[in-house]
Image (cartoon, rainbow, N blue to C red; front, side, top):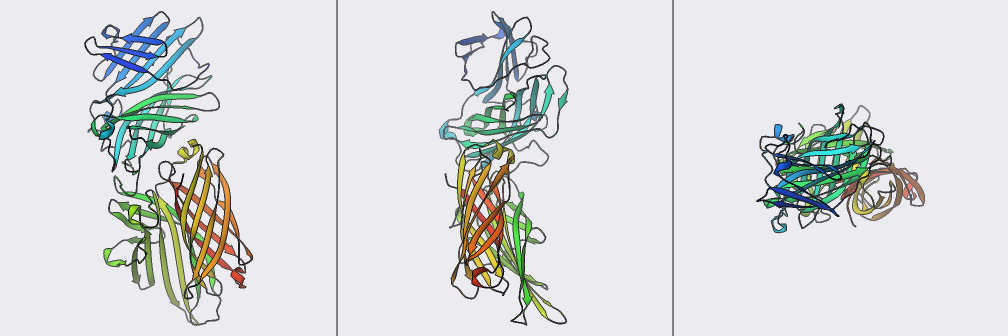
Length: 539
């Protein structure tokens, strides 16, 4: 960018998308740019001394003012540490600035755009995942403040099978005239969908010295989508605007020391580690006294799942288990990978809900859950205590809160429920059912219901465990825990549910829940119900 006047502050600003056409005359080495009725040609005589390998910088004076054109084909930041990058072969990053002035002000139009050899739609991959390392540049204009530029590197990941992308960049803001700046936790993020013609787009969120929401639009360039380019824009309610662009190449380097991140669980790019959330319930009683009442309860739990392209490697939390093939046991439903093992303290079973097309119930790409059961018998001087713990934890690739914040519209999700219920008279139930969620991103709210059924262990008959309804808020992209209620066996029940969205564009959902029915199921005993639900977007 250039300033033809030393204007200290931005007075007014606006941003919009415009169609630009660009023609290149190879024999004359000239570029002709057009939008609307405006047209300008840039040629060799207009090149400035800043031009060189990978940068063509033009400056020209016209009757209406001064114009600048900068065309980059070199990765100007990422190439400094990613040794597998060279000059872009198929896409260029460009900026066209049109200035006019009066006695006191400068009026500037700043166009950020990309152009090049577009990928033939027939050559677009349809399976697998891939990563691009990108370079970002843009202009951040705040009314009443000095103009800022943003620059940095980022990571662009694509899941070709599902047709989605995710993008995250750490950037630096630099004051255009005084060269002061802000670095640190400044982020530009986007997630969206791929189209069959090689284009992509979705919501965009900027979090820096201002918080803005907007959109991103781009496409792939070169054979097999070797490179990409995109433009972005965002605004806030105070009149602050952001616009810019980036280009990228497929790369084995990431913009952060944490390395390349995964976009899918079914086709990961690298070994991954995710944190899950869930609930654990217990029932314990004197096994040598049939009349003894049980101690029951539940507590929130976290879990950590490590996985790679072959599946889950280990599961941990307040326990740790590396999966071993010799521990595998049969699963008649075909929905789980089950493992059983024992030690001197008790017997344990771990069940992992299968991902993708391997699961006959619901094919999940970005989320899943696991259950862990521990049965321990503890002899004491006066009695033998039997204790059973059941843990249900949902896990996966969570949707970035900034993307949730920048998303509009309504989404509906349907899913399945797995859980357990314990009653104080020692009765135990396997819990199943269905879930439904409606999320209004624009209003920042959600509601839904769990329709729960139970099968009493050792009895076999189905039991109605109620229809539980709930609703709460979404604050700054974070989904708040909701209270839920139902009537079970003629008695009121109360509990909580904590949903999490998964996938680049909130394609899937997971939630853990816990509830209590006092004097439930017509029996004068408390009933605890707990478990998880996972589901997919249905609209």
